[in-house]
Length: 288
Image 1 (cartoon, rainbow, N blue to C red):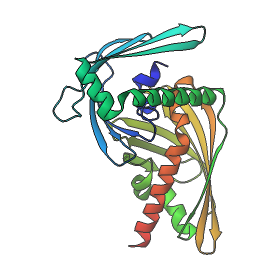
Image 2 (image 1 turned 90 degrees about the vertical axis):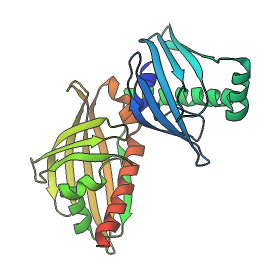
Image 3 (image 1 turned 180 degrees about the horizontal axis):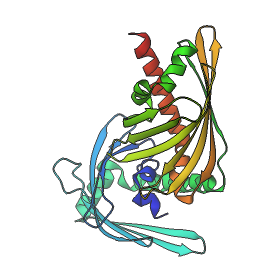
């Protein structure tokens, strides 16, 4: 439970009321550190936010201040979150302290803070449940897409590192390092840079390369200390569909640690956004 508050990979998947998404621009999880983020409302409005961490006692207690700057929403309050172990379950208490009753009432009235917090905690419960299921075992992920291009072209976009770097990863990610030696036994190495400037590294090997029909590669994702978080095998099939390409991606988790759970829980959405970016790259290349 505590890690759901201490890792932006977790936070992006549950923070905020129903229908909201969150983009992190800076995250320093330490006393005095700042989490700078934007909450995107379902109506298209962006809410600029700033949190400053005051005290961190993992995995029992977290204290932070919200607001306090001119470039964020005019909402200031302090928060203490406690995590009590109850025989394998966790009792979470979220206490918000406002400077005055009037300021509390304004936030409740103008921002719907009371209902918003209830929905946020509900999303947290759903996220923790998903992670628990992931830890028990991850079924293969299978996604099929059709691209308006011949399979020779689509296959090339997967194997040419110049093109691969332009579309690999979810929206907002870039790839300052992208190397791919697309032959059996060849290496692949990609460093993805997230919108919050964190770098996510992966290395791997091409197991099978059969142009333009089949591509199989195994990748390892390490943590910040270089220890393996998880290992997956990607199998990509390219089928001719009347001049278009039917692409089928199968992702198989070969090895995982408990710390990999938030990454694996977001795997479906991450790959969906990545394949959307591939479609945009296909259109750009075909358009000259």
